[in-house]
Length: 299
Image 1: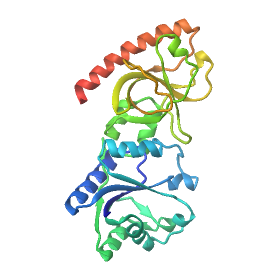
Image 2 (image 1 turned 135 degrees about the vertical axis):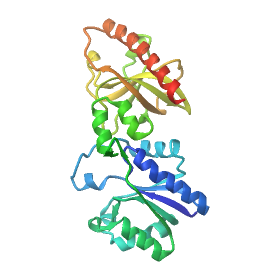
Image 3 (image 1 turned 90 degrees about the horizontal axis):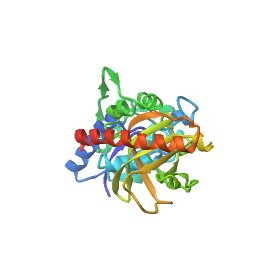
Image 4 (image 1 turned 90 degrees about the vertical axis):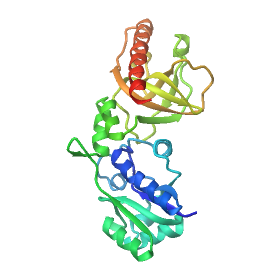
């Protein structure tokens, strides 16, 4: 199957990436191709010990976002192993043709590839011309006078500024995973929760309570989520505990996706379970009002 491939790492898939993905969809439509993303299983910066190694999204969440919010048909993941790290730049495009059926390539201005990152957008364009492939290089996207970047988004999420992060992302911050068994304390208090681990190497947003929307079996529900260690009940492992409104059913082992709407309050340790129960009821009211506002402006 012939493909139009968008090239990049795509961590924290944002409005800069969106411009690149739109161009890929256009190329696919015009050329009778399938729109796909070709990415890496880990970032080159982290592989070589440079920069912040924490990811905004897990590989599974990146795949979910690319398909749900951007309409990408396929996501191919290259292993950033010794072969990829030492691949001569002139061998990169032929590899995409032979391994993935590439007929058109799209990248950003700062895209690099090959041994020592010696290949860039210009060499990609030249190689495509030589091989008779379509090629598009997309300009950098700026917002408020600054380049839109995963670094900016990561900083906002660490501060609990999920709405500001959403301006850069163009969609809610997503964290998904398979529901794990917890201590069932929430169920005894009348607000059952789903426990999600934060994948290794993935950034945890600021610890605290958030208004969220949860996707379960293709349906979306309002809810609240606590990110952190659950200090009142002696938690230690960092994770996400989600109470989904107006939902009943067994979801243990199911994969769900959480959309972070806005930060409600910091995580704190309460004197006893009764005080925690009172606060959760307050948090639910605040979250429901916040999510009503979101629906009026976005749905």
